[in-house]
Structure formats: structure tokens, C-alpha cells
Amino acid sequence: KDSRWLTLEVCREYARNKCPRSENECRYAHPPSDVEIQTGRVVCCFDSIK
Image: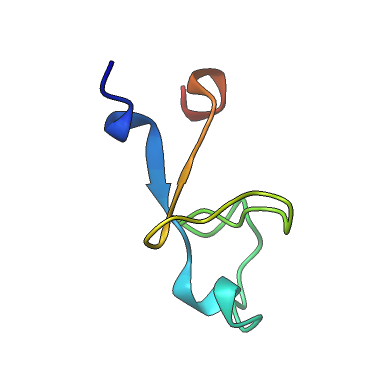
């Protein structure tokens, strides 16, 4: 199955530890350090993006 639709773009500012917004205010993903980032995107759980 194609899971590309389950990916979210990671906040570029967050990746540099400079995002002034909380993860709830920012339109981009703020993944924890143990989550693998691939080409600026993370795969997320379907239930979390409803």
C-alpha cells in the first residue's frame, strides 16, 4: 500500500530548534527525537491526523 498520504512535513524551524510556535500552533510536524525523519517528512498514525 502507498502510505505517502500518511506523511507530514517537518517544521524546518523546529528541526533547527528555532520554531517559536508550539506543536499545536504550528502547521508542520514537531516530531520527538526518536522519530525518523525521511526527506523532511515523518510517517504518522492515521488516528493522529483525523
